[in-house]
Figure 1 (spheres, rainbow, N blue to C red):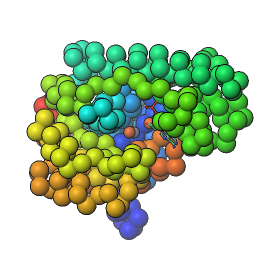
Figure 2 (figure 1 turned 180 degrees about the vertical axis):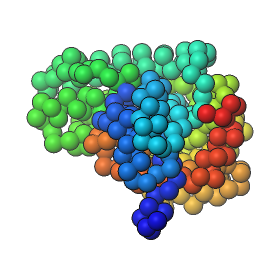
Figure 3 (figure 1 turned 180 degrees about the horizontal axis):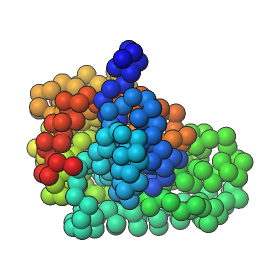
Length: 284
Ligand code: AMP
Ligand code: FE
Ligand code: FE
Ligand code: ZN
């Protein structure tokens, strides 16, 4: 094996498809991950598991391992926190009721944001929900409509100029309490990992104290390698992960062409994936 292939062995544990705010189909992610020489990948669309079937089929065709996941919209102490859930059973229950509520709230919020944006830019709700694979609507879909209408060159520019959190067009959306989401993921037979705790767009990193609280609530791991992390924010987080005996994961948070993040840019080693799978009630 060449060195570049060895460097990419492992799992990319955080990817998005057209079922939320990614731009590629789950099967394409599987095929591209296999081409990169990855051992496996997780599909972690925002608040939906509807891409799992396509991902699983694509993974079988591409001869690559698939670990089912989700990225849940949560909040802790009023601050937005994204929680990755892996290996949850796809059956009705408290978690899926809560996710349905979050998706409905996102829809209402997006409609209201579009009404605000449409005062100044010629976009419509129909243009935003467009080709409708998405089960979860977010700011990226509004951004895409503004790009399609020719106002901005890409999503990132729209986020910087129009859809940033303090902008007059911005509205929040309902989120599940992070500790409740951890409990629900575990009740559904899965394991929970805190996503991107040091992403540079946050005002501050997640504190070691908060990680301790989440660990006491059943958190299994923390995403310690992520393309948007600020390296100078990481040492206290790494120390907490190690002190609390949590698993550390790495992933790309791939969104197709929706973000600069490249598939396989960060990966998780096979031993850590095996430990995550051991924490899954019925291995999936
Ligand atoms: P929302 O959950 O609807 O508030 O939208 C947040 C999502 O927008 C995140 O999950 C990212 O995928 C995406 N996002 C945030 N900032 C940017 C950016 N600067 N460029 C592209 N996508 C972004
Ligand atoms: Fe996203
Ligand atoms: Fe996220
Ligand atoms: Zn993500």
